[in-house]
Length: 312
Image (cartoon, rainbow, N blue to C red; front, side, top):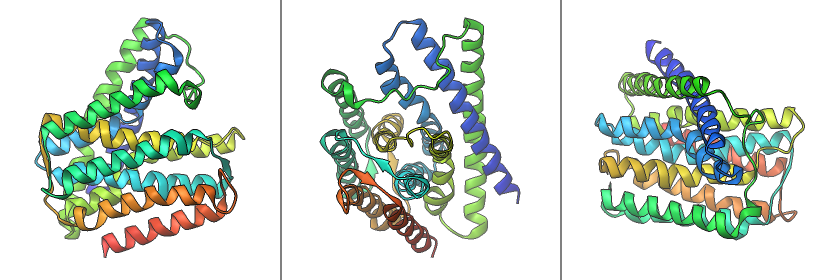
């Protein structure tokens, strides 16, 4: 019971911390006169990936590499199999052309790069982390130079400049909440794994990863309730690209990440590649560039099967 409380409290702090950090980062960027398109792609993406990043770094440094890896791999599966599925079950979404020209190919390239780095030797080395971060940087530069139209303004509606004291306050609160939340979440996840007799990887790819995907899910549901366009597929794919290249790239630059539970290499990583690939035919069949409730049912069935087989 205490473990579950730690996990819930940790996730709550991570969500609030990420939100405060986002507000501060956007306010700071506006003060520095950085163009909105740049803020949306870099600052907002990094801030929304902050919970995953802090949890992965903390887990890797605490000697729980499977939690660090499971969190990211599970988050990528949950973003598509759970968040996207629930979004399209509540209302169909139209997909932009940039999906198959930019977003999806880059997500697959990032997934395959990660697969190539970790599958054969079971370790993500520091130089491999550098390659991943450089790839991310090159992708952002490419988007800014050639694909400006593909980037949606995903800034919060209240993106008005904040007074400096509020910016500093949000920055401080966000940082403390992320640190405290990661401490509680990892402590709870480790205890839960040992009390249920499962590995940290299983808790990482199920409980922790769903928890760190909650902000995306909440944003999707709010967008539908407000009758706005549902959160774009591009945003979820962008989140997956950031999880792999930024979160695992930066974490492995700080400390190499070694796979302990081989299930990550024999099971989870293939589910991540499979569900990432599955999005492409779903977008085109039966109606081109559209995702509807049938696609949502397929995705959620795949996700439930993944969780069932992983826990079993």
